[in-house]
Length: 410
Ligand SMILES: *Cc1c(COP(=O)(O)O)cnc(C)c1O
Image (cartoon, rainbow, N blue to C red):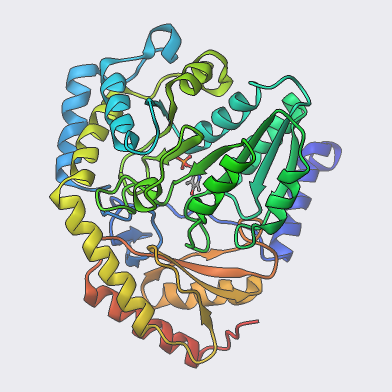
């Protein structure tokens, strides 16, 4: 009986508390492939919420590559990379991923992971172990993704690394803290594109600071890889950076349209992570067919099709910036496909999302702890598969909801 079973009682009362605070999250199962239209509960919704920025998740060439990969390599990898799960498909993919960053990281080598979450945990905890316990400092941007935050926390717990948060729009305090830091090992950690606001890290300035104070700079480019730079190589290409101090993380389930992630860094850092990166060592290798599929995805990203898709995406962003004018809601001016409309309270964001749903749109409300308290929002994302018409209809719909609903920006 639930009253005599404490853990169950706790679970039920905590969930009820989340309900009261309008913080309960709900799963919605889609019946269709990830694309600009999505079928949910038998209804077709216009989706502006995925991270499939280039519209590759349902691309025929990738579907064919996955089938071919499964025929050649089977379905499961069978073991972790260091036992017997490492395939030539992984090897080829890692070579190609390293070549994407070779202009930016001397002796670049890449290491493939099943998820970005795992890549971030591995990179941060593993690199910090280069220093003796208590001898590392980590500087982490306040609005970093949860997987970076968790990596930093774990490194703090495992290796007694000291942790300092910084505001990425205001680097003076970061410089000030580094100036007084006598620790032999320093790691600066930042999102490349901040995932809930869409703004870019000041990567160039951060690299200068890293160089001045002998730190490593880890950039998680989950939302930049495939999107930024002429060839889609990401933020290092866009900002034309080059340094041995760069630790680059890219994810492959967003713009690349498939699944997985990678760390790219100087060969010696990667070799160290293979030796000591626990989440890497103790996890089964991703199916080789996925790596095989990603080879095709990288060709698309780098080639003419990718360039055309990025050009179209930029056009959508320009139209949004120009034509999305609210009477009272505020929108940010992001230069990326992530466009937040910050509505403040959870109730406001939920109501706006509900009205959009009734109008046939899928744009979920993003609430704390994903975003800071009081900054609940709609997070609108564009895909290269959206047409200009799709976007203009969305703009029209949003204006209408703003004017006719009681949703006030707070
Ligand atoms: C999505 C995301 C991740 C996690 O990547 P997964 O492959 O989805 O695990 C890491 N960092 C950022 C900034 C992200 O947006």
